[in-house]
Length: 148
Image (cartoon, rainbow, N blue to C red; front, side):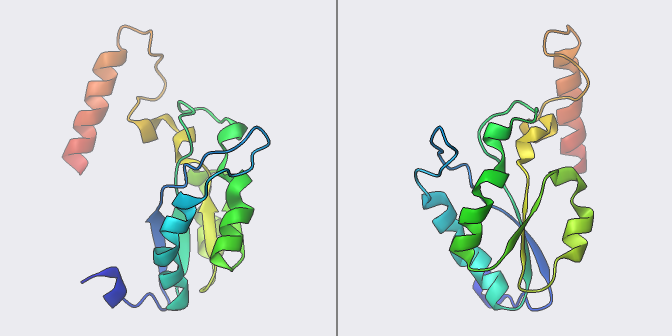
């Protein structure tokens, strides 16, 4: 079954998109090609009567919050492109309430996934300079392979 054959009516769909768009020094999008590329999927979900939770990364913040890489600064552009209000969850790992509150026909944009080191496959709680870092990284990858 393809996405075009699926009916999203009454469903909430989480969609990983590539909104890693270039920004100027004032945080303005200089090329919205990636946003436009995701529109057919996002609009299909909304047109069917579903809701969409949008997740992406921007840049390489190395697992740290960097507001210059916040997806919040592109929320208005995504909203304009989609033609529906787009709510924003400022912490992608703590967006459960925002996702639950989402009504059909609405969209929610999650904050940059790479504000968490796990998104880049890096162990948490250990510095890269620590001699145990490589072992922790191997253990984390092995754990992901067993779960996946």
